[in-house]
Image (cartoon, one colour):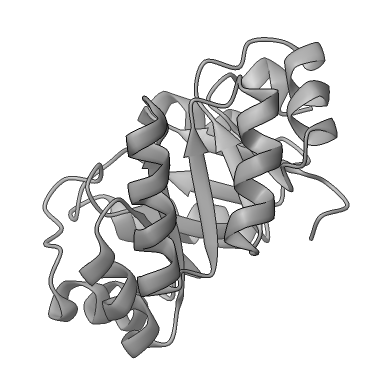
Length: 179
């Protein structure tokens, strides 16, 4: 999977065609709602994309175990993105992968995030914002799992810096940078 480290962060339905026609292999879906999810997932599956649904961003999805189980069984998604530890546990129970999204707003937030990650054991971690080379390297070393960085990245140079600092993947919402 890491042979192409860009993840398409789809934040609007209008971005779906660009994701379908790109060489990206993985999508973090933050658009749509429970009524449109089936159609979106089928389109992405037809192009062999891995699909992770951000459960706090896609409309109409609860965050309890039943909602995560429903996503796994009814839509066959690969995993979820969440900021909630209990949702990580629900994903594990449903047999899908989880990405724990954390925000590094200050040193205390970083320490809290590391404790939370060590406790709930997500499959991957997404660190935001993604423009902090020193923090990326330190965080990667301390969490010991695949690290995605995203947020505020606007150029190929910033992508290269993030990857060079230890990120495994870069999550980007600009379709121009998916290629």
